[in-house]
Length: 380
Image (cartoon, rainbow, N blue to C red; front, side, top):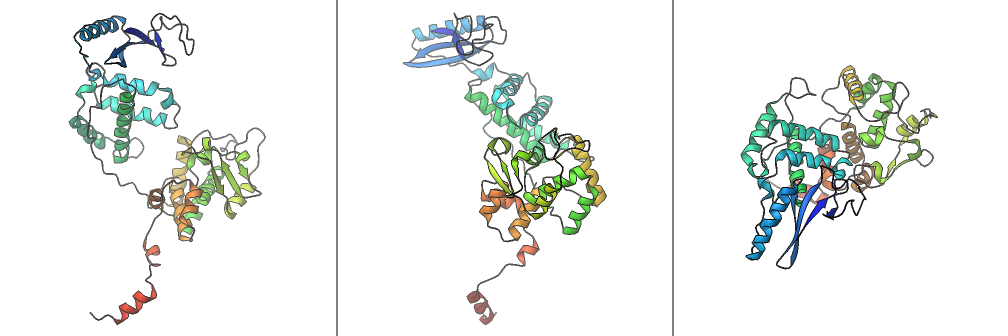
């Protein structure tokens, strides 16, 4: 039975006697206040490691407790949920390198900020209940939306916040920070967020006329290729093949981490061929000042909403242009697997979600000839 010290840098568990981490050679292993103690022991021939915390005294006390239990042939399982607070789990989750590397990290921060505000961060994980989460949902749905004037927080936002809570609790359990998931059933939130806005040709032309030139080019790209907003904003000339008519995205450039080729049709090709290529950057789409657009930020959103207002178009997001492309591509008779390849969908269900079906599609509904003949002869 021995004490181990978890390295604050690489999380490797070292024997207590070492002065530097065996894995990353971190020299301040013993002096760093962020280090964590573990107890390493055997029970019934199986090696077990139990996380204690930053206190050496607590680790030694737990070691004594386990030694006494071993003499009696017992193992006293420590309930980690009885000592770990929600705030500690929140901070631990946001400090994980694997989480910080995600594109969605800033969104996780926003979700946890809301969770910290309405849930008691000093509360023990053990005491978290379904009733608390149901109360959380009720409170959040009544709060005003910071981005939609006169409206409250959308159910989709609250559902994503609970999904973040579920995610971090699962990670904490698998990393042995907590003993078990305290919630068996999370509240169900009904979300109806299927987008239904497809531009008519006249609306599309009015939108282009209302957009500043730098945004107009991105609108043409989005509606003409079905590419994601982030893929368009970060597009580089090195990814564009005007001769063959393709954009070639690497796995690191896509949301799904899979490389993808995107076909460029006539309107998009014409737009790209007309764009100047600056010498100071490889980016395709630049701001009004000629600088690369690092991300779709508040300025982009303001310009988009202003253009919609001028064009007389309501309730439309830039992402709806992706839905628009999928719907028009399917109505044009393209095979579903070809459209999926173009936009990067992995499942038929996701493609169906993006495809708007309305009365125009129902007009194409037909029966085969045998069904038609039988219907004519049938008497009612």
